[in-house]
Length: 264
Ligand SMILES: Nc1ncnc2c1ncn2[C@@H]1O[C@H](COP(=O)(O)OP(=O)(O)O)[C@@H](O)[C@H]1O
Ligand SMILES: [Mg+2]
Image (tube, rainbow, N blue to C red; front, side, top):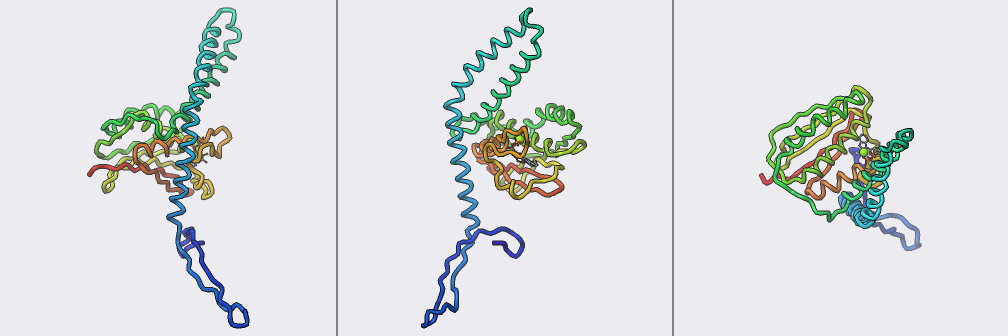
């Protein structure tokens, strides 16, 4: 159902048909209950359940697949450096690249495991962003795009640095991929009430409502080459940091907000 201001509202409808003494219906009487919030909660739980299952499966098979891959990769590297193989160097490099790609998908997969142990340390998000900045900028430059860093004072947070880097990179990569050449990404940090907020804003075309609903579903991608794991990993990392992710989008661009609790 649509509310007066155009918001989509889920309702539960309980109605009875009242009939007169001849059995002729003359009125429908009932109540409409707004269950939007419950519906959102259910969706959230369903997503966490899916992530959990996927994470557990990944942890189980990840190692079994990785070990033989490491062996194959090692031999390929060894062969590629042999004199009699130099004319096939290109093929060896390609094979090694493909194995690296498969390996990084397994890594992303493993980071979906909900009960994964993480290494939380009290540290500043701004410091992490500043160290990453040259890398991010170089990444953007390749496709002729820009990155602006706008950091305000925020208190230290309990963070797993490796995971937070992954979350930031995934969001920035999506932003870069959404924009044509010349576009800019703005990364901000600021305090709002008792929350420290990281926002990543792009100048892309925005996200369609039907796509918004699926954000964070593992393997959901609108890109031809997309693995569809980036956002699933982000949501999973955010959950482990007790942080929430919000999205605002219009045809002028998209902003992802990651909200961390602060003790203040
Ligand atoms: N900043 C963004 N602008 C537009 N669409 C986005 C943005 N971020 C994510 N999306 C949409 O969400 C989908 C899933 O993203 P993600 O999980 O990172 O997987 P992938 O990038 O491999 O497609 C993308 O395919 C895209 O349709
Ligand atoms: Mg992505």
